[in-house]
Length: 158
Length: 373
Image: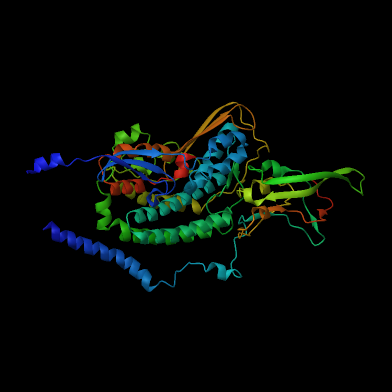
């Protein structure tokens, strides 16, 4: 007798499960969340806090906020940030002031922990929502964040 | 020739096969050396080391703020809870009290993490037992939690949202609304999960009475989490040693006594409801307060030992910090739930079929980087 009841139970639970999948089969289009990724590049918008890569924003005059204090370099757990800095005489005050020569960022070593951006006292570096980071040559992932010829904005102190 | 004579004539021989390190049912690079006789398992020997990254040693190199992001990479499905464990241990050492707002936000995100982890486990368990649909449904619902995390923390999996002393930044303005939307939607999905998989008769036959873990064994092997609670061992750290905001919410500790694969399945399914109830109690009144307690830029813990345990989605995670008073810890040890849970696998898998071992492993919910660290 249990043989037949087993068959009955088996078919019943099979149909119960299939009613769920069948329901989705009928209204599949409504709740679809599949992203048509490479085709929707124009409309794809990442969240504003998304951690893609570290960038240094420059204003129109090619000035940035980085004073070269090296807080980010110290905060980084895996040595992704290297700052090559120099001292230059400030023309207005005549004092020697620290300035960055190169702010080198190794994207290939970055774990996106966000500690450098937390540590930055002047918000000179921020997250950018770029995520297409695959390249053919690993060396292209080593980036110099300050643009050539750029300098720190006047009045930025850490 | 009689049957007895025939039996004596056929010799069986034990031999070994490797299950893993690239086995789809092992969820990672876990190698199990199975000694089998026909299809009957005689011995299970886990072989670790394929994803060892020496996280504990790296912690000795890093400052206390930097340790936190390494724990993301241990049990990546409950990364926020791991982060919190380290932060709580450091806060214990510094003797700072975080604000109520931080506590509540941490608890809400903990429970969201737990739901996401259990969701993924449910899908993968179904897939291990041959039900591919569950995998897609689970990932669909988990996607909403990942969106919440991405919007608030900036990352979907390795969030690193906790810092010693609080949180990195405040929650996103959309956080509350999105969480409520998710809860409302997810409540309709769990009955669907039950109809699809829990009530299925094939699923019952694969799981009931398979891989029975007794309460005594669970205690003596140090098993924790839902796996232990399915054997009737009340081991919920949230209940017995409340941290963050768990002392102000009302929730049940799910206990089953059967100890088989189906009981472990049911514990996790019912924990989903408990997590939902915890979030619902907290989400409407997140207190105001500071997001980050003032800490020095270079944190130095006083000389001594600090231990903090939390309940991750897999069980009890303990963080032990031995400080010599410097900016780096002298020694850090993680007591990971997966490692202790794995140790009992051989004990309960003797004389079962290989297929049953797969079902048992699925119900244990192993995350291999957590075992290996």
